[in-house]
Length: 184
Image 1 (cartoon, rainbow, N blue to C red):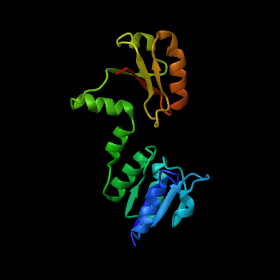
Image 2: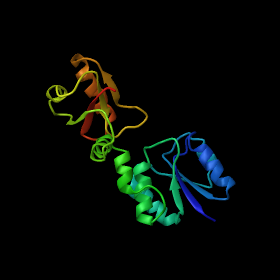
Image 3: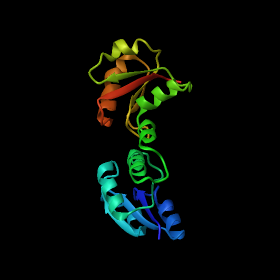
Image 4: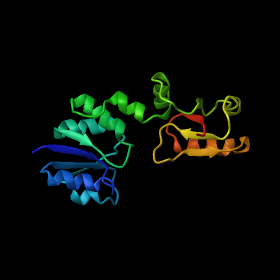
């Protein structure tokens, strides 16, 4: 029987779990503990953080999975890429996963390959955002580079709102960088 590791056990993963089981696939659901509906549906549950790709890789090797996937979330995309690369599974590569999960890397790839995108600047939280923002036109979008679901993304219409926007982005981010870009 094929084994599929499913990242997450929330409502967005339920249809995926159900469909895999209908197809006769053994499902291994990975999630932090919580009241998630996918736990009751899975053949096996692993209580792990889906962003801890080294730990998930250990579990994937131990369980000898045939595939890894998620639905409705992007927080585990880097983990999926790491596991696919390390185990030779079909799917997203680790390099592509990192680009798709980091707004700075994504915007740089857009520019590299001629994809139209809003003008932006990369900043660290201790940079002079006022000087850097002066290179762009208001309104601006302040964005955490590593968030999902529009968390840590704030539209700013005047410089008076910069400090609050940076504070919100900093609270959301797990990195020391963020971007500002022109609103399109």
